[in-house]
Length: 585
Image (cartoon, rainbow, N blue to C red):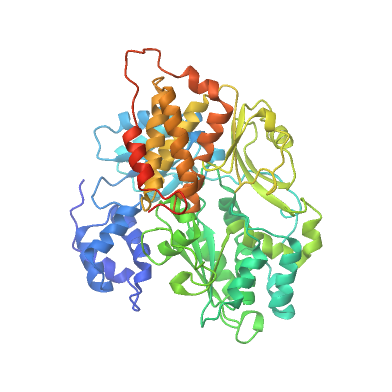
């Protein structure tokens, strides 16, 4: 049945829009509309234009930027199969074909999306934004029957939506408790300088991937003069193969929120925001319950723990399917209801962030660790790890291993030990830190997980001896091409060229000229992309060229009469519009 009922659309939009008519909530309103109607109708756009005094062009540009928003009705069910390499390894393509065949006579939107954060429980999918894991042929048949019978999603069997936490290895952080207010009390009694010293002595670095020292970030924000400061939790866990933050928010949101509240006490913030990736929409109610419980217990809200004047509260903002929003300045743009385009830096968010106010943006795991360090002390933390990488961190382990899940390890642990623990010792390679990370082959398995050696944002994907590494490269190339925000030419054009070249080798049609073009484009992207995400795109392809040169040679075309595909014109134009000494625009 097509969407035809527009009578209540204006009324629904009016019920969404808050009296303050804050335009920074535009994305949140669009998400509500999307999940009410399975698309954003034209009359809803017109009503938002009227209610928020925004241009229609601006609203439509936001809709077009986020992959979870639709401007046309495709059916009452929108099904997106997770398409990370680990889902492909588990057979998502055949399950996609099975469902598509079963529903060929029904108007259903069936497609693919990037990693949904369930690599340890794949293959996975989203149905109208809700996650279903551990897909197999039987489950696909069950889902097809439910759709054929037009069964509303809220009446589907609960067993389809069960999620496992899979915490496989614990160390000092999982084995300690936090989140009960003791960390907040310590922060209020000892003062911000003392808290900053504890964090500085602990050597805690951000757990999102960049590894910047947490104490320094908070200090810079505290020193920024403003009538308002903000605390933002980056829960946009979009790097393929990463799911640790999902587990923390599901099992221990109290500690994450306590870490945010400690930060607020240090920098003088009164408002916090959790930017939750759209794939984790199922966590919204659970986190809101935790927030309300903490308000009731005096751990959030007005005069926290009886300390007059310490007021701090938190709200959740959902993302809508955009990998780039994991970059902190793009995340802030998205929080403000706009397209998630990275900002020019400096100024940095600690000085000019959300709504142009000083803002601390930290990862979920970072705030989780803060809540424990403040209670247990810096020495408790530094007795684990290495001098430059103190403490422990969480790994999301998936792929060809017997025991996928969440593992806590001290920094300095070798890949050999990690692979033994998870049952992946026969791996031909490990992909560290997701698609934008490093590929490590067996000769490097004695290397250590640390900022000094192999840094990671938490993703650890194991590739067994039976895997074709060209499948990995093809999957990542298509991922980057799809997820490029399109703002800068080096990334927009470079990802397309990379995808084209990799596809040629996948089809055994590559040549020496292709290899040269691939190296040239990767080199230019390294130094010319506007944001850090774009600059890391080439890593996996350069690793492959350096470590598996024979693989590329084996995939070169044998028919010399077929002319070599020439990307020279594209690359030449690419070089002309790219500034090797700075950022390419």
